[in-house]
Image (cartoon, rainbow, N blue to C red; front, top):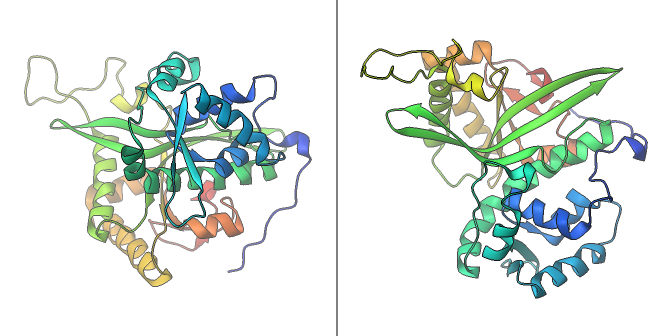
Length: 308
């Protein structure tokens, strides 16, 4: 399988932030949304056709105003990862795009360094989709990716997806609105623990909270549907993006995800209704996120994530 990149589209089709909003405001909003980003990532996200210096100047001005700060990445030639200060988090928390999202100010460079590897890898994944969407003329922008989306699954437990993605495919005047829970795996946990996440998603898919006043009888939501229908017209597809290990190890982890899908009855039922897929992050970056680099966890050959 040798995926090829699609032909470039007109620059007018790129889904990039409008310059009518000042770049410093967009930087603050992007950091509030994504928690942390390097200068290069902010450039790709907000001003892909500009120079890195176009981002460095407003970032340094925001730092002088004590709204953002940075931590230096280890072994990176002094690469900076930027994040909001407590003042920056307070300034952005009432923005309409962030309504309902709790602020997560990072209080020190030490705290930032602990969050950096995973947070920046999740953003790397988002940028793979953003870059592909611009090339294809699809709609997926810097605010269409919400990190750390959490839902109850019963017994006082919750599932927190690394990100929720909104993506609109446009093809010959037709539009398909897609959503996906994205799990980014850096091979830092056991393969078994990764596969167990599928059980948690299956629990979310079937979860019915107890009726008030009854401890055992489950009930549907007030509108007659399951609770996840409060937020999604259809249950989002589930995408696992893997990195941080060799090809053989990553393939074994994908095999274990497929085995869980085949062996667990609740996950198998989920897979018959909800698309489940896995891919290697470096393949998304090299070939394109919309290319047939995705393995369906329900079986079958590789395909684009939109066709799982």
